[in-house]
Image (cartoon, rainbow, N blue to C red):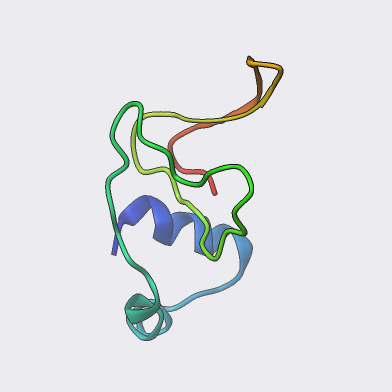
Length: 77
């Protein structure tokens, strides 16, 4: 499992290596490329993201104008 993700969990609660090994099957690691969407408007998301590297931008569009709400940095959920 990714060390940055382990560190995030350890900052929340006292997870052991055994806890991480038990949790690992519940995670799916994937790459989102530039200009790809992690989720889209009108869809209910059934997943969450942990940013390992790069940035993930959250935005909405009204009348063809994009408004950025936040950027997710590496090491964040």
